Image: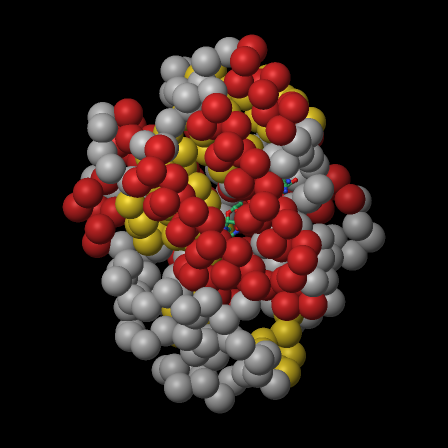
Length: 332
Ligand SMILES: NC(=O)c1ccc[n+]([C@@H]2O[C@H](COP(=O)([O-])OP(=O)(O)OC[C@H]3O[C@@H](n4cnc5c(N)ncnc54)[C@H](O)[C@@H]3O)[C@@H](O)[C@H]2O)c1
């Protein structure tokens, strides 16, 4: 089986490329390296180029038959999407439409799409399932929801079936290396906390300690990146077995607060994690936790690394690699 991985040089996509390679698939990675790194795509063929380049896609789809496409490519920073929505709608929506047109033209009918918990907006319940209202509160979330709508329409009209996987907070790294999150400066909590532990960051900022949560800090659902990849394997196989397209939440179903993440990082690394408190950021809900029952019952997905300490230990392995690479004077 041959799979095209778009965005395979990024954080989650690079883990997917490795997983597909280990499973014996033929893999082609397409990435424009806007935030990815060429060396992160450790398996198969690499093509540097843009998702919105129709001629390039026609060349790729004409050169070999693809049994499926996994589409990770996107801009992903919520705050940036608020200040520069055009950038997000162009890349995340318009370029995805180009991909879908090319897939149709070449009769490539199976797609696994990286959606996001950001499609839900303000949570109305303790745990969010797929029937929770989808009312995104920023252009990033809206760009993901727009693509989901397009995908449903393409399935109904053209038979292009797609699994829309709504990730909660991807975290961790492959313990076998050498890949991991590479967003600099980045906004994701686990890499930032570990950067503070290694000394590459002076301290971590805790935004808001007055939320209605047990310790007053925001609660999020952290899911191991390799567990996300496993869900993609299951989703693609389900499409090959004839399943109709659907949306699935991917989370652990366990929420951890910012302070719990910092505490776990101190335990795992044996180092201090300097922190400071700042006011709440606008638009940060108190609690975002997944109900992933549908992925369990319909795809047979079970996270293998649900423990926060395991996720952090694997992420710490990657932070040590980064530390060695940058040879940062303050790296412990
Ligand atoms: N990281 C998370 O916690 C999280 C949560 C929910 C959803 N997601 C989604 O998962 C996907 C992957 O996220 P990530 O954290 O790995 O991000 P990332 O930035 O590490 O990876 C995205 C990759 O796509 C590439 N890319 C972007 N635009 C492109 C284009 N037009 N053509 C070709 N390549 C392009 C980038 O160079 C990069 O390698 C994204 O779609 C994101 O919205 C991520």
